Structure formats: C-alpha cells, structure tokens
Length: 234
Image (cartoon, rainbow, N blue to C red; front, side, top):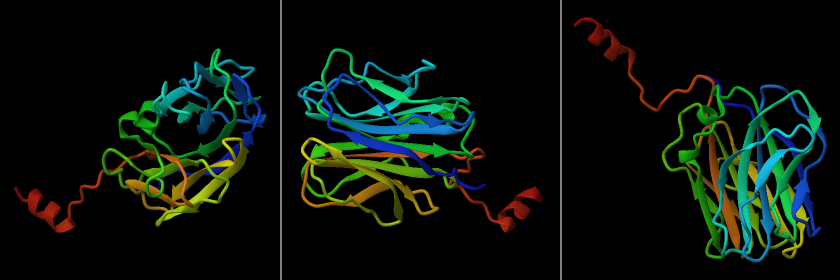
C-alpha cells in the first residue's frame, strides 16, 4: 500500500496584531485530509479558542498545540476532512491580541478512514521552545511502514530552513514579526521516519512530528513465505 500523498495547499505570514487570523481563500476538496500548522506570538500566549472554516463554520479538530500560559510563542496543528467549499480557515485566540501569525496547510489523500485513525494524536511529538541545538521532534513510537511523516518547525530568526536527512522541505513561510521569524513543513522522502529534524542558524525554535497513516496500514511485523509454509503444515 502506498503512503498518503502530501501537497502544500496554502501558506502565509502576517505581522498584524490581532485576536484572530484567516488563511487565504481556497477551494477545498471533499473527503481529502487537511492539516493546518501554525505559530503565533504573544506574551503568555493562550491556546486558540477556535479553528474553523470561516464562512461554513465547521470546526477543525485540535491535533496538538505546544504549552500555553508562560511562553511567548506557540505552535499547533489542527486537521479536518475536506468539504467541497471555497473558504478560509480562521484561527481565533479569544480576547488575546497576538503579534503575528504564520501558517502552512497540507493536503493529503490515501489516508486511513476517520480523522482519529488517520492522525493518531498519541503519536504526535513536540519539542521546544529552546535555543539549544537544532529543531528536532520525534513520534512517540515508530510509524507504521506505509505512513507519512510530516515535520513542522518555527524559528525566531529570518533565516532559511534546511530539511533533515530523509526529508524534503514541502513549504516555508516568512514575514512574521518576532522579529523576522520563519516556519516550515517537511515531508519524508517516501519512507516514514520517527524523528523529524532541521538545520537552522542559532535561534529559539519549536518542532513537531506528525504521523499520517495510510488507508490500509501495515505494521512493521514481517513474516517470510517459508515461515508461512511451515506454519500451514500444522
């Protein structure tokens, strides 16, 4: 079984101070999988109060967000099964004013039926904020053999990301005010990886690793044909 596909669907960055942000208006396709990765900055930033299609109003599901309440920046991932609509996605922070926002939306096909099966939230790894080393985050356990691994990272400097070994940079966005921050998404090169990593200049960073499981997922348990033949004799 082939792993799920991955396509950069939308990305953007804004320096506007606001309590909510809308992505670009795009035409979504029914029954495809969409993941929005984002970061926002504010003193003692809070978790978004809602993430939804702006006009349609249907909420997206929270996959993972970094700690809130004591950090100046936060990264997150929300997902939805596509509807046949042209709309934006709005990320709202309630009463909190945020000083800038970056986002990347990834579109996927060939994923396991049902959002909980496609993206097991217990598998998502997150790291940071720290200025030690370079961005790296790991899934809790090894991914299934046909899965897709996506990595998201944010750094507080306006310098390009270099994707890690066995990964390709899918999209990068810059222009955020923290100052001159950047965010990027990478995808594995056809073989699911447990750890996502990047090369950057020295900066404070966050990182996230997400597994997207295939429509017919296979584990990493292999049995040889000879073993099957022997077992069938009993």
